[in-house]
Every structure is written in structure tokens, then in C-alpha cells.
Image (cartoon, rainbow, N blue to C red; front, side, top):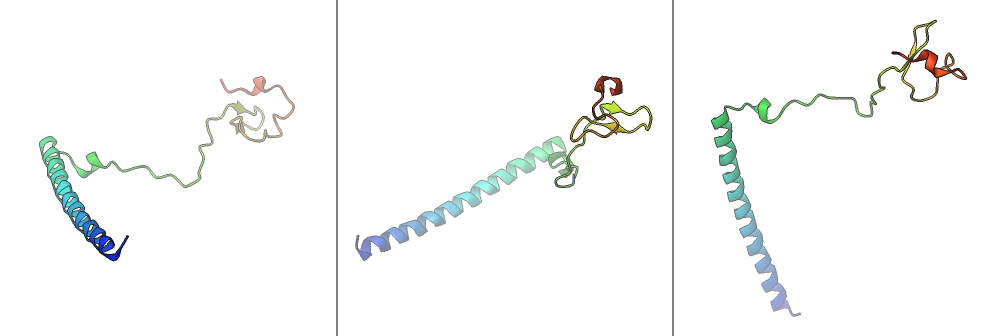
Length: 98
């Protein structure tokens, strides 16, 4: 490949990049116009379109609902993780929360 071919290819790429940018700009303008028309037609608010997400702490796990209760202390356990001392080695059915 010689220098003339490379220069022509680079010029062609620049022209394509320019056409792509112009087409993207026009497509974006058309999309915005359609969205605005829909928003006006249905009297939508920003909250309708973009509902506020509830924030949760990153890494915070849902501990789950308690499944077992110690009748003496009233403490509960979900059945996940290491069992507490008050239930270890015992029949768990007697501690089930019904």
C-alpha cells in the first residue's frame, strides 16, 4: 500500500465520521421531538418518565424474615448463617414461628 492509498483512506474515514456525526445529530433531534410530543400528549412529568429509585446501601443484604424464635429470650433467627446457641443441637421445629 502506498502513501496515496493511505491518504485517500484517511480522507474517506474523516468524511464518513462527519456524515455519521451529522446523521446522529439529526436522529437525536428527531427522537427528542417524538419524546416531547408523547410527554405533551399524555401530560407526563419527569417523575413519570424517570421514577426515583429507592437507594439501598451498597452491599447491604436483605436479612430475610425471622423463621425461628427463642421462647425464653424472644430472640429470632432467619435460618441463615450460623445458628445461635439457643437453637444449636435442638429440634428446630419447636422454635418455628407460625
